[in-house]
Amino acid sequence: MMKPSITKDSIETAYSFLHQKRNVYIHSTLSWQKDDIELSIAEYVDSMNKELYAVIAADRPDFLRDHQHFADDITLAVEQLEQMLQHPNTSY
Image (cartoon, rainbow, N blue to C red):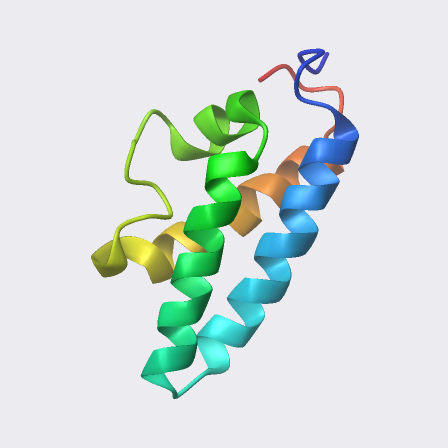
């Protein structure tokens, strides 16, 4: 069962936001647009459900905040959130 602090709504919100931003990011050829997305995601991470972030970040404090790993991180985050939505009764 899902931790009470990680609600389905928090997973859906994070998934929707990150999925949309990832899709733009991976298809963008504009460095300024990618930088804007990275900044937007970093700001979002600061305000998202802390327990949910801890789960998807696997205790990496720089997850979704490190320019060098951002493309891999956002893809991983979207995949993890999608799995969480597909298996809502799993304990995290």
